Length: 592
Image (tube, helix red, strand yellow):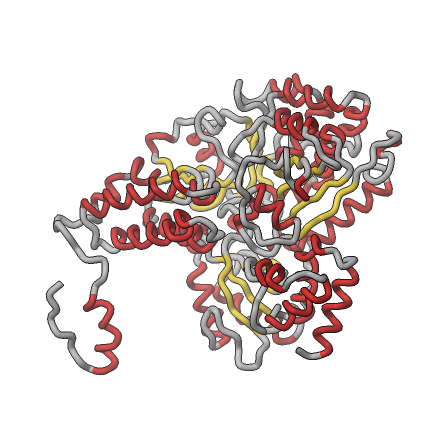
């Protein structure tokens, strides 16, 4: 390894105080300087931190944004999520390959540009979209590709600088009374400080507010468990790693009203007895980092963060932003904590739960962006005001990220209890064949269920709402979801690691029209095995695209199955087709 690389590593490690817990930040900074993290660089980081290189290798090899080998000075990551494909991603991909003269996964001969695919980057409402060294490009058309490449080659995009927040359309289509209403900085904190921490938690209980991540765990209960748990320190973590395809509501909150989220984190800190908060921001939203740091700096100047917050003697609380590096599984709270500690984002065994042993094995409350915004509003306006909206078991409002086949994609703030039918009318979706509620890990519902309500009692959702028109091949879209889960599995447990791959293979056979009724039966059996045997939420929800379409769209499967008793999964003639074309030979008939 060159002395230059070693010097870079040593300087960066020193900048972070040789703190092993900051390995994620160290790796990000090293990668930004060197363009890769080779085995030699792994060793240099390990030496500088005084840890084993296995720890560094284990972490850096896990995240999609860390490359083991040198790549182009600029990496173009084109999003290939389902909505992007629906909106013409394939044509854009072809244009990039033709313009650059390389395929995806390759680098141009001059070493300037690498071309890669990436999962959802939170821009499904303005697809197709891409990341270019952290810059976000949206609404890309094939005819735009040449100018993008020219800009990279001329150096206009080469430096990897951060674009303005306004370069990405906010696309807030409907503001409601909770999240996007006018906001006074510090109002919620001052109200909380006039009460005891126990009374603050009780106010959340009166509001009956539940976590907005989809599971709907009562916020008051989580805060209470965390406060009562024994530990040398308590922590607050805000989960900003919205990686579910079709979800982008956090992006809009962070653009329009990040103060509200930071306010909620500070109130949470007071309630659970924490002095330190962490905001985990997904790597795909790196462009927002400078803006969010400015917001935090302003709050410190206003006395809303730091020592003696709002003049309250003894209440010290501050927030640090932790960037991710491309891993959907880090949306799971224990995997996020592992990543926050500078490790690979693998979910932990539970119990113990994070409220008992979270960050550094100390009591930690992990809440998502929208939930903490709700907490700030409850303190500002009161539990009665909040609980007057929504339904009995789902109080308040919900943010929906709506994309797909509709006239007005974007973020909508609606009261819980709204029907899917009303949502479709609101966004201009007149010919919906299906609606994916809660993203790939949620439910794919048919028109017969459009009268159902979005709430915890009926159709719970983290926010992703994807609409499929009648001209879409719905099962092909489900195949894309399965592919996503295969790629994003952390690989720890066999039911998820191997099961998702096997499930995708079985599904593809049916999709190709080579499946039988027995194959259909085996597909459902495999899906249920993965669902009930997997260790964490990813594996437990990965089969949902299959199970919910089997239940709600049986005719689509029936139309594809063959009357044969058995059709082999491996088609020898098809496998030899390309070789025969090249050699001019014909395959011999083979008895199977």
